[in-house]
Length: 150
Image (cartoon, rainbow, N blue to C red):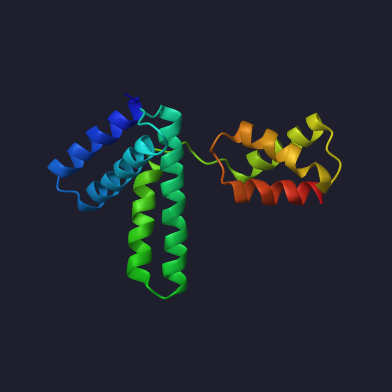
């Protein structure tokens, strides 16, 4: 079984014993998403740590988007709850790249690939996404690539 999934389960048990409602609900939600992913497709399978991390990233993104939607609709209480859940999930994700690091990484990839304009965006994005490895959102990466190629 994936180490990350075991860690999530152990943390859930600890949160339940400590009566930490937010952490308990958030970890239950993530573990349910992991279980759903395991049984999706033609046959059930055990997820690797990388696949569990992908589920965590997806769930964290959902929380961010929901928080923005609630805040935009003036529902601050729900927005704060979504942000708090996102904070719990952030503890399991790798640290996000700083803007300066992302800029340098994109510049390096553009130099290495010989990209010269927007027509090369796909090539650059593929190489940058591999180097970033989940430490920056795709939208952030795409914006930086567009800025440097444009």
